[in-house]
Length: 147
Length: 94
Image (cartoon, rainbow over all chains, first blue to last red; front, side):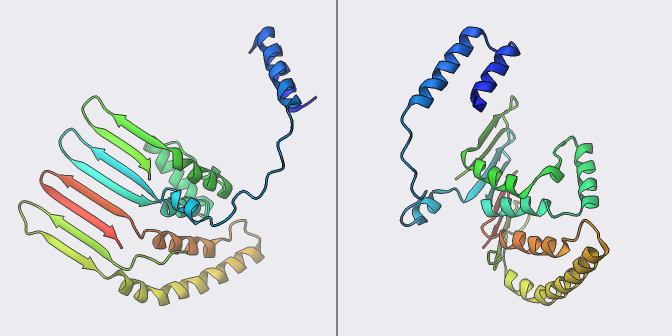
């Protein structure tokens, strides 16, 4: 019994899905299994990877427009974000505890000691699709995006 | 590791004061700091070796120092622009 099937049955047992939904999911799973296997994948990238690398965003933009007319634009190289995050994983534990305490006092509850190097690459990769737009009621606008 | 920013362009415009345009040759600062960094690197390597021998869990001061250098190197291209009440501050690491 494969993992997906077990998961569906567990969801049914836990009452998260109905018997009908479970049946539909199992049917979908079986039809997927019956489908012909995809041809073996070749190398992920063939040829010159430079155009692909050029398409990746290089900068993180933070734009703040306040209702008073104040404006802040910051353009941060993505490589700086990456190396900064990597640095947090190298900070001595005692110093990291102090940083976390100070941030908790300020209401920021991110525990940077849990940040692992492999997570950092994933995080930076995910930044490519990130766009945050905040329109406050008082007219302040904040936009964070990559390009 | 990227080459650190070679210069910093700073422009400050204020209605009350004369505009300030500064080009700061950061490469001179890096040249001055280089001997200190090399000395610090030797110190951290020694400290890490001693800490590892003693059995301390944390012995990554050398990596921490190199990480700091990497962060400085990656500041190249950072642009900060602030406009408020007629005053403008522009800062670019080139």
